Image (cartoon, rainbow, N blue to C red):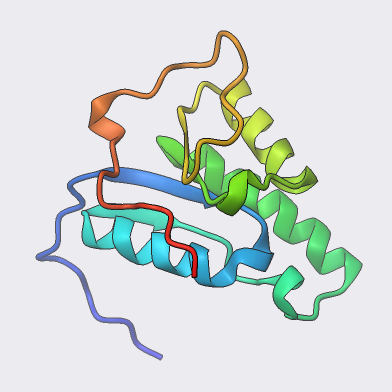
Length: 134
């Protein structure tokens, strides 16, 4: 498939990586959409193992490493954590992001960055993204 060039599009919000349990596929998709419409370039999970996408153990290990690379590329991360849920993989990603100096934002109040982690600043404020649970 040939992808169209986005030569007339400017990313106004910077590059963000979405982290969160893949069981929250719909929430991740909604946050991805809202951040994209707000002008952010968004990196997010592309395979949703906890929502039924089958992968081998080797594939899962590669996906975990790939997501850390997505964190490396981003200026900050956005944690999709409905009900303040943060699983083991997401907690590891948060710790990795803060250890590399990345600001961390959360969909819901949830856990806060470790003491000494960089504070969020208004230039990363995704004002349009709010938790909505049915």
